[in-house]
Amino acid sequence: MVRTAISEDASSDGLRRPRRGSVLGSPVRAIRTPGSAGGRAVQGACPRPPSTHHNVQHHVLLGMVAKRVSDPAVLHLLALILRATGRRGLPQGGPLSPLLSNVYLTPLDQMLEKAQAVTRQGPYLYLTYARWADDVVILVDTHQRHDWLLNAVNRRVREELAKLGIWVNEAKSRMVDLEGGEAFTFLGFEFRRVRSRRGVWRPQYTPTRHKCVELPHKLREVFRCRRSHPAKNVIQEVNPILAGWVAYFRIGHTSRDFTSIRDWVEKKVRRHLERAGKRSGFGWKRWSRQWLYQGLGLYGDYSIRHLGARPKALPAR
Figure 1 (cartoon, rainbow, N blue to C red):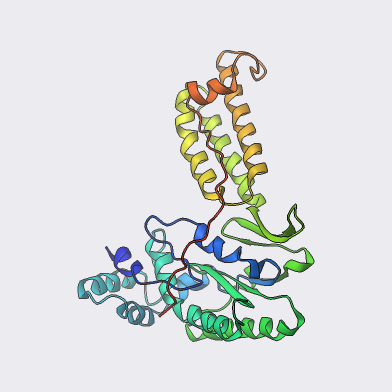
Figure 2 (figure 1 turned 120 degrees about the vertical axis):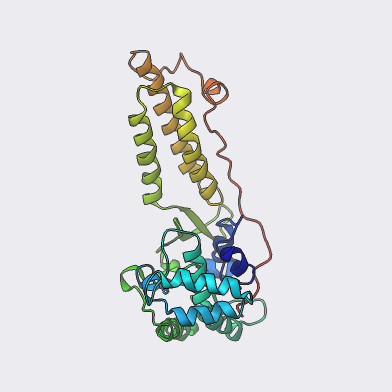
């Protein structure tokens, strides 16, 4: 109830809030705009935990929520939830924490949106940003005349956060030059600037190496712990993990990663079947690929679904 009441009105232009039924596409769409493909990025200018979650001032947060929610019962319930965490900080482990982080960092959105509007010239954006909870990426045009803007926005971000009693997590904050071939990570994706087949510069976003290693590690544990179980039972456990990972990353340039994951999973299933029959090898001639997917029900939707244009969220208020 609290999450629904607050999320109905907590939005901004660069902010893409976690909400019921939402997907990753919105913040990624904000980064892939043509104006940001050739710019420089300040990654992590907004702090990650523990900074935000342990330093939120309750009275400031409640005042911000009160501007959006007028129901006394909701505000009272939220106050009780916050009180359980002590004098400062947010409750951890649930969907309410990132939502409250979004609300608490609204002044940061307002500052960045104002900077974006002031520096804009017609249809050309020289500064844009995307934020998801307390993770933010700020993109600045690469032309030399905008060097001052890069330094100014970095300074202003720190000033706005200081007003909220939050500091920048220096270990997770850095400045990269996309034009120089550098890359940055955001929400599990690695973003870089590449040339298309037509010779046009464009943003490319692929799963980070950590995410590509994390999935096989998780699936390998399922196969190891279910070694003596029927193949269909193992696949029933594997499919949700696989489907969730693929659904999350299918909006990126992930065809190579998907092919690698699909081939790896097929080999693990084949080896499980051969081991059950006390045979060596992978049964390439014994088990067809079609049977693995149609007979056993192995997850097989590895299609890529690139992002289309959608309306942005309302500006921060």
